[in-house]
Length: 157
Image 1 (tube, helix red, strand yellow):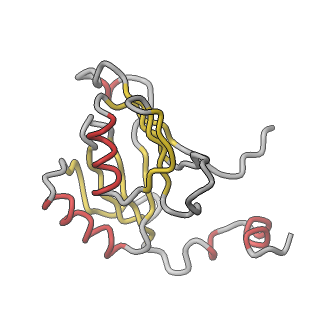
Image 2 (cartoon, rainbow, N blue to C red):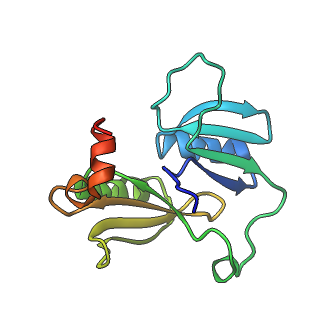
C-alpha cells in the first residue's frame, strides 16, 4: 500500500485564468507563486516565502477552452474542493462576505452531521464548487488524531 502524507494540491480548469486569479486572490486570499502567462496560475495560502522562483502551490488554475457542461454535477470527476478555516464563526462571516461580493452561495452555513464541521458551499466564476469548513468539535484535531500521527506532528517520531 502507498502511504500518503498529505494532499499536495488541487488543479482546477477555468475558462478565464485572469478572472479566476482575481477571484482566488481577492475573495479567498490566495498568493500567486507562479504563472505560465495566459495558461496557468499557481497559488498558495501564503505559507511559502517569496523570491525562490518556485511555484509552490495549494491550488493551480489551468485555462481551458470550454466551461463545465450543464450536467457536470451528475458526471464522474471532482465534486468540490474544501478549505479549512479556524472557527465556525469564520465560516458564518465568510458566508456574509461572499454574498456581499455577489458570489453564488449554494448551501450553508450549516453543520455536517457526519463530522460536525460547520460548512458553506459556493461556486467560483466557472461553477467549480468550493467549500469552506471549520470543526465545531472541542480539541479538534489533536483529540481525534491517531497516536502515531499526533507524535509525528509534535516532532516526536
